[in-house]
Amino acid sequence: DKTVLITSHTHSAIDNICTRLQKFKVDFIRLGSQSKIADNLKPHSEASLTEKCTTPEEMDKVYNSFKVIAVTCLGSGHPLLSKRTVDVCVVDESTQVLQTSIIRPLYAAKTFVLIGDPDQLAPLVRNRDALNAGMSESLFERLSSSEGIITLNLNYRMNKTLTDLANTLTYEGQLQTGNEVVANRTLHIPNIQAVKNSYKQHQWLVEALDTSLEAAVKFIDTGPVWSLSQTSSKNIKSKDTPDSKNYVNVHEATIVFKLVEALIEGGVPNCDIGVIATYRAQVLHISTLLSKFTVDVSTVDQFQGRDKNVVIYSCTKSADMTRAAPESQSFELLEDKRRLTVAITRAKRKLVIVGDLITLQNYKTFSVILRALENNIVKFDSEWNLLDSS
Ligand SMILES: Nc1ncnc2c1ncn2[C@@H]1O[C@H](COP(=O)(O)OP(=O)(O)OP(=O)(O)O)[C@@H](O)[C@H]1O
Image (tube, rainbow, N blue to C red; front, top):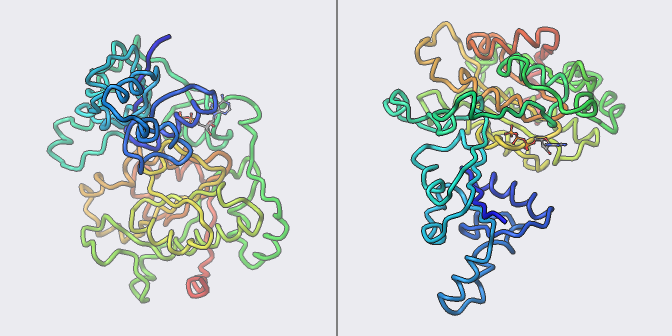
């Protein structure tokens, strides 16, 4: 009989929970602007539910009739929550929420439960002074204590090989697979023989798409493609961003294109494929290349909380690291362990990482992964004429 406020940092996280509530026939009101709410949840939105109200009293009645209220942390400044106190507030992805934002929904509740993974993305703070002063510390981390935390260490997403990689980078062996079925799941490519025939000349691709459990994670080494860019007209770096934070790597994009094309030819549904890239400019570039396939292409941040059967990760950066200043490197996205943890934990059955091995070895965080994948590195055999064919 309790009243519950469900909240999170993003609309998509709220919508994920609401979709599950819908399946279990739990009634709720979804606050927030209609345009931000998923289509399947529109009948639960405040706009739809109050559509027929003609007086403030009628609206009041509708708003107060729901035991479950769902809204983002920022949206919880809603008048309904300044008038009502709920029994419990549940905050999902709470390790991503700024303390200044989380305080608002918590004030509307008698008790609260924070859910999150402190090893995944922290609240986004760009200002270095604010970062140094601790602004990116979430309330979850601030309240963290052995008595207060319950660890959920069974995962039902990743197979055994993917779980092992996540343990090597971050979870130190604590993460386990939920059951044997999950542990042994591999990618099914229905027309694998057709792929092998079509790509006979491209052994790197056949090797990268090996569907055995042991080969569930593959790293394709592009080689130092930055040097190719110096001699050709192809660009590595987005021209309008001299601060080097927004790279485009056309060589990696082409490899990603070939992999997606082969997967689709092999009969893998496009909704099972996800592409992640480190920088927004690369996401944009790959999205344009892949437009005819309609597969999801996002930054790591946009992919948190979601998963796909097969994920291709374009690391993107390829540079002459002998010229890079080490102190600037430590602020780079590729050195961010939490971001890398999210990137490698989105795939359920198969992960293909595409990158320049020599460049990536310069990042302490990344080199942990490269060591673990020693036996699963595929050398791309310099077929850069592919660039012209796609
Ligand atoms: N009990 C279960 N049985 C089968 N599958 C499950 C079970 N619980 C979760 N899953 C599946 O595991 C995946 C991850 O679940 P969920 O998104 O709830 O985890 P999460 O901890 O929020 O993940 P993250 O924060 O890393 O994105 C989903 O694909 C979900 O369908």
